Length: 188
Image (cartoon, rainbow, N blue to C red; front, side):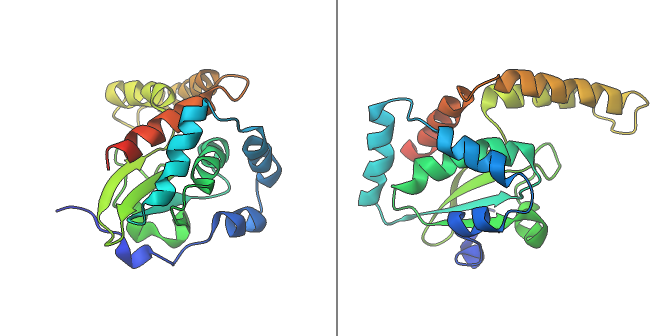
């Protein structure tokens, strides 16, 4: 059965409300948001062209404690800022029913950006991190299926360090987020 999120429209926070209410990582979140630059004029124009569509909605499952949300959602906010696409930010812990429809490797990984039509039918989703960064976790999960294995925690720590290495020092990864989000939006 296809997923439908119409019951969540209008139940979340606006991006501005989310940022204002952050109790963790607000300074870092705002810094990533301020550092955003369009990869190209073409990308900027594509997102602005979404103003011609009134059939799209965006839900974002996230929380301010999540490092991936702090890195990636400022990019999503900026990309969609002038698009006219309404955004509802759903705090994961307050919307577990929705979170459990969008599991990653069977677990609750955030952020999840959900693109839906006005009827709530899910058209696409993105997250929790850019594909090249997520590939590290995918490889780990494929070869380490047992979270109770004696060395699982140690191996997971190494994976998290590699994820940070994949993000890199600056904000170049933001270009990947824009490209992947654009790819989804071009297909709907």
